[in-house]
Amino acid sequence: LIPAAAAESVLGKAGTEGYLLDEGKYDELLKASTVLERLGWHCYESQRTSMAWDRALEYLRDFDKEAEVYDRFLCNAYLDVRPVVSRDRQSLWLELLYDDSRVSEVKTTSVGDGVSIQTPLKNDFRIRTSVRIPKGKMAVFVTNAPIRDGGERMLRLLVLRAGMWEDK
Image (cartoon, rainbow, N blue to C red; front, side, top):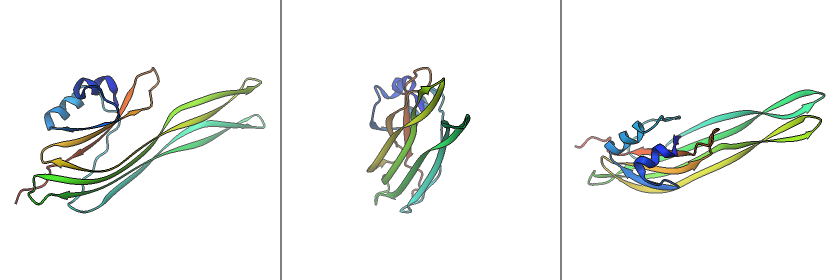
């Protein structure tokens, strides 16, 4: 996640789009703001690699005999990639599946006598594509993320680097 204002200073107006960046533009993007989440791993030629992670939000679900009842709302994410280096070794074909689910808002509803319950609302995002990335470039997929407290618009960036293979 990255603040939209910082990303747009580098990428231009960003919405649900894809970009090819070089290392310089990527560094500029990172310097423009604080990255709030960052995950990474390596995958090898023609090997499918997957990663899944869970996030949970605790919320006030109900009252039971004057006691508060809390529950956990799961927000899962899943990334599956399979890279294939081109025959001329100048680009990478990437099969990609990315699913991400986040809490976009927690609605609080008054049910009388000063009692309120909370209902989490979810925002789902999915990419399924094949993309060619030239050697030395990286693909960046951008989508809007839920607005943070304070009204700051956030963007979700999925960055995929190519060009980390050795020439033979």
